[in-house]
Length: 341
Image 1 (cartoon, rainbow, N blue to C red):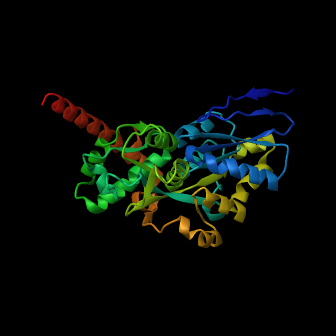
Image 2 (image 1 turned 180 degrees about the vertical axis):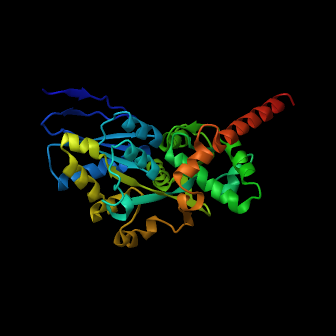
Image 3 (image 1 turned 120 degrees about the horizontal axis):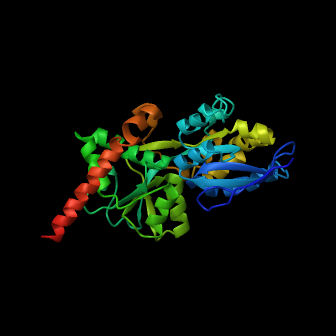
């Protein structure tokens, strides 16, 4: 007997997919991804369907990484996932949704391309922002995604922390001063970008290079510009097949082809076009003008596993929570003092 399930499509939330189970193949392949990769996949899906024609439609679900993982864990029927923290996919492994060898079945540890964290400022850089040290000045307001809900928010926080540990005797005080300058923490990198570019909040946006470059291209050369800090985190893009779902709905081979094609020259060039740093050496050589050399680091090599990082910084009442609460309290005290002066 056929069962029909319907999921509503939201711009920044769950993607819609209508499918038939039982002995019939599902008619929609669902890619659940973190939010700022949506523009790449819009083009990639067209290229893939041209190369691998089928009657299966490709549907997208985009949002903050943490929320996306939780949605899949709670039953969102993803066929493939695209995330930027390996531990998020490992959480799906523990649930039995993804095979344990997910990093071995695809090239380069399942990382087809990546990005780095950069600073996006207003055109002409009126606040003369050049590095992380400028983000703790009293006259600078900083926007970035909430590290509690966004993987890119965590990369932003850890990039600043790496600088603080190199240049400050008291890195926690540095981070406290930075967080005092944050007027709003958005749920995801795309919503943070919208706050900065469309709502005109803040003087600088901490964002992945691909998101910042896309904003600069979309808004025009007279609106914003990208600043590369002296040290920054590399943000790998991880992909994996959700094997439990693809085996149930008959889309294993198509899902495998969908992910494998990300390493094709065509997809690598498309990634570069969307300002993701490709991993194919030939494509890298052809696109050097797009990607300045940066002093980048691997967050896991510098700060430990994601389990260690999250336990120290991002769990409830972790270091980030304590610093952010202290920053907000200090800001309220200063605001109150100014109002009575």
